[in-house]
Image 1 (tube, rainbow, N blue to C red):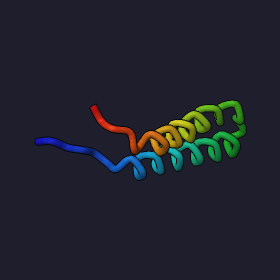
Image 2: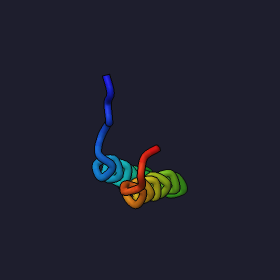
Image 3: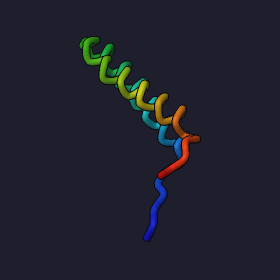
Amino acid sequence: MDSKGLPPRVTAGLYAAAGVLFVIGAFAGGRPAFSGVGVAFIVLGALVYWRRDRSRD
């Protein structure tokens, strides 16, 4: 059974949304230093989005 998974746009959106929620939670919880993890998720979502059209090996 071959599973392709989610489309790259959906995956990128989910990563970015998780990052935004993590940043909001970090500031709301009084720990702004943890917002770096959220920023990393946002960057990961952007990379997935920009690399979506590359050929697969």
